[in-house]
Length: 313
Image 1 (tube, rainbow, N blue to C red):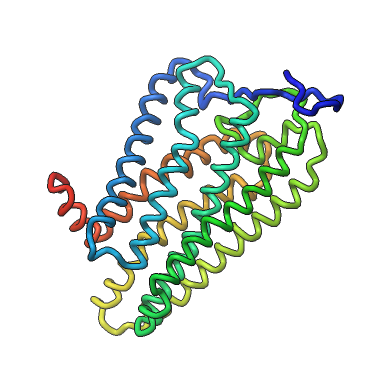
Image 2 (spheres, rainbow, N blue to C red; image 1 turned 30 degrees about the vertical axis):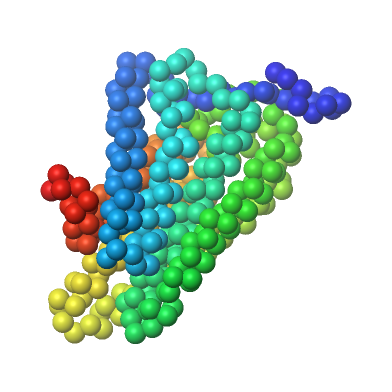
């Protein structure tokens, strides 16, 4: 324990203890190997996507520009969580300093929020490409794409700054055992000795904006997209149009289902335990699967990967 508050009478914790992913020591080595492989696959897969798109001028289009941003977000998101998770599997009790916990909270919330916003921008891009193809080059020009991508990063950074700032105002005077393998807003609020009303209000506002509003905008975009595809007469034309957005739709469904479970559903005891698995899905599994989904279902990405890396079949 240490006093971070000068003359205040509060003696706040100087570090937190993260719970291991599994309390069964028999499976520690198995989990460590599994998560390490996931981390390596996520890093290498997303790095390959970024390199293939960057080195292939034919893929310098809005859709692949946003895909590059998604791959970068996946790399930094999984790197925010998995190294500490791996450390917790090889040590007895993984301690994280107060500042380290706030830093992990800041970056994880930033990247998760940015990914939700980016998925909405990608849905808009597909809407313009399929529903307004004649205006695509003007509506999705380079300045517009840069503005959209920049807004994604900045808006999420502002939001996470607010949440982290409000979290830093709270007192944590014990216990310091986090019932999770990472520092996240819902689990940290359970340990606060201070009133968390303002934090909860801001969480609801963020949930509505990042979760509900962006999900609805994405679904509206796909409503127009599906209606437009159904209006195409040729079967081949329908397949071609749907293939350009099916990968993105799959990622949207997978990502929103896990984030909504964590941040919008109440944090009951059972959901906190299940939350470990769910958190693993959006911090490790999704970043690993995204490159596979976009490369296996996208002929252009496959060709670009083979040009850059001939050993890839």
